[in-house]
Amino acid sequence: MEKETKQRHSAGKTVLAVVAVTALAAMCIFAVKDAQQRKAAAYQGELVQLAERIQEYAVDAYEVAAAEESVWRNSIYQERDASTDPYTMEDGVFLEDFNDALGKLYGDSDFQSKGAFIDSNRKSVAEGMSRLKDAPEGYEDAYQALKAYYDAYIRLTNLALNSAGYTYSDFNSELGDLNRELDTCYLTIATYVG
Image (tube, rainbow, N blue to C red):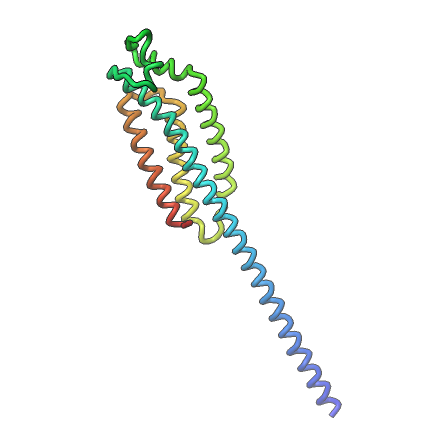
């Protein structure tokens, strides 16, 4: 009888130990899943914020590049416009060389400040991209979409900050292509993060 009681007692301890180990394992699994979900939510939040910053900063870069394009075009075709006349004309007469008009634009302190702002923004976005490079499970495609968006943004900032080597036609074409690419990339990211 005593042996039977010890066996029941021992079996009860075994069952209790199995239940305790199972509960502990379940709690660990829950804690890991919860940590993964929190990490994924934080990653998604940072990804969305960075995509929105790229969108905002791309507008700034586009405006600088569009100003260059306008000065270039109006100088070549001798079109008057209140926003470009200070660069394309002197004493009411168009400059003979569009490079002189672009040189006046590049020498303008407001234009230079905008260029410095674009460069600073570009560095900020690069830091954000480096923080997001290790995407958690399920966010690999979203990161690749963001990377495509970032690459197009960098090409736009390069165009805005350094138009050397472009013809007017190539510059204008590249600006239009990048604008469309950025729009497409932004819409693609939206499908991943809502």
